[in-house]
Length: 469
Image (cartoon, helix red, strand yellow):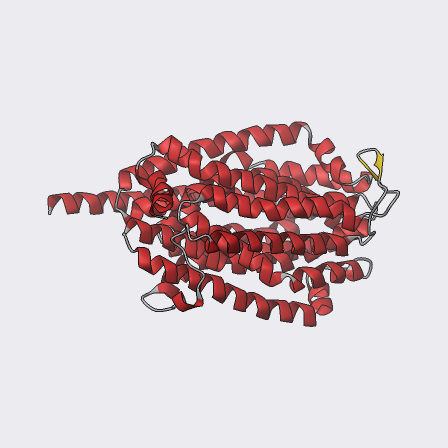
């Protein structure tokens, strides 16, 4: 057991910065890549039904899933950052209470949300942009997503907690297991016998449509949770999910929530922004709603890869900050920024060259494709430099700088984006709606750079004063 624990922390202390970033970030990025494929799979396989109303229904119901993601990140990301900082400070016993607290509070909150979404699914879906053509499909999708909400949240929380102790590979495996199972089950549950997939006529299928996509997601999350339960039971982790270790004392609530809240708020505001976009697009018809859903899913490739790298180095930043090794921390952040710019530039060029083909992969409807090409062009515009903001945001989380992280999260999806949406819709109509997010992203990249420079200057000043003392 001691050997395993030592191996997990060596990445924070002994590895060179590029090796440490690679060790932590590559599993996280691979996990995110599978996550992108898994998210695209629902839209892709539902699109193979040839029913654009079902594609639009998945887009409309997506904000509900984002609420569960928000709860998972509240206790998962918050717990991850607090665990890595506590490791750097040498507080290993406290880590057991942090992990237990995050796991069980997450389960309780998820159960309450599930009950609310199931009880009020129809009025909620009409509120977020469902039409009479999509409401029944959206209700089917939402019911099953809500029913499995506890497993979705628990999977996210435990995945992040394991990442916080430096076990990036195990964290990735747990995430990927659930997503691969989901991808395998999607065509089986969604499509009917006789449907063609990649030119092959399917001999099987349950013909459940969007309902099948949601059920596959739930089963995948259950598989992830089972993997992490086994991981904890093996006794090779410094974390604990024992109820005996559950505690909210000694600053645990503040330590988790101060960082988890900005991460959670980002998902809630993402949910709100999706709702607002759907409402604004509704007057242009279900084709526009479906196209934005497809474009946003395609855009997830660059966003998730960049977030995966930023998320991967967050525990390294947290450990270095807790150990007051600011020089190593800054080197890690700069190296992460450079990698994210290269990733962003590569994917952006590919998407802009192949945008029509990318949208066409998901749905064979010319009207939807025409909208989708415009939308993906706009969404990819800031793609090269967007990763810098993600690195800075996750670095703030790793350092426990909840206020700074909160400003960036609230800005990109709320304080800057939402006013931009209203203004640009008023000025430019549909084109304004399409370009509101890219313009907000550009503002936030600049804001992140200014805030990060101010933070590092303060740390440098504190380090100089400590040396003089």
